[in-house]
Length: 288
Image (cartoon, rainbow, N blue to C red):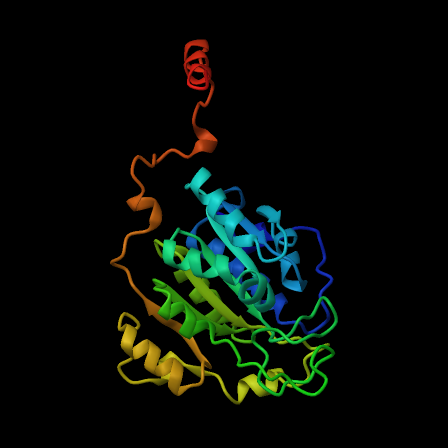
C-alpha cells in the first residue's frame, strides 16, 4: 500500500518560502495515501497561478491546464475514466474570477471531482493585484485607492448553487486539512474545499496571524450538523465565512455519473473503441 512518500517526486516547488501552498501539497499527498490510492490511480488537474504548479509537484497523473479551466478538464477526465480519483486545483482568482462559470456549473452537475481552491485573496503570480476574494478597501497595484467591490463568499455561493460537499480549512492546520481532503475524495459527488493559503510576498493584510485570530472550527459549535444546510448557511454567515471543517455534506444526492443514462462502469480509457469496417461504413453512410 502506498504511503504519502510515494506521492512525492523529485521536483522542488518554487513557491516563496512560507507559502501556504506547501501545506496543501502535503495534505493532498497524505490524503491520497490515507484513502488507499496508488499514484497511478490519481490525477491532479491545475489551472494557472502559483497554485497551478501543484500538478507537477505530486507523483500522480498531472495536467497543467489554462487559466480558469481546470474544472472542464477534470470533469472530462473523470467521465473518460471514472476509475481515476480526480483532483482539480487552483487559486481564488482562477476559480472565482475567470473560472467562476465553470465552478458554478461543476457544483450543480455534481460530478465526482474534488476541487481544492488555494485562497490567498490576491493574485500572487502576476505580482499582487486584487482578486474576487480581496476585501472591500483592499489596496493593491490594481486598486491603489482601495477596492470598491464586494468580497465574494465561496461558501455562501457553493451552498446556494446546490453543492453536496462544502469544506474549508487553513493551511497551518495540516491535520484538519488532510481530513477534509480525505472526506472530499470519499464523497460521491463534487467536493469544494476552500483553503486559506496566505501569500507571504504580496498580501501583507491577510497574514497567518490575521487568519489565526479569525478562523472558527465546526468542532467549536455544540451539536453542529453538517447535513443541515440551513445550519451550515447560518454558521457561514455568523462567522463571516471564516468557518473551517466540513461545513456541509449531502450524502443522499446521486452523482452525475450515477444519473447519466447508459454510462458504463468501464471508462472510455479502457474500452475497445476500434471500429469494424461495417460500423465505419454505417457511420459514413449517415452523412450521405
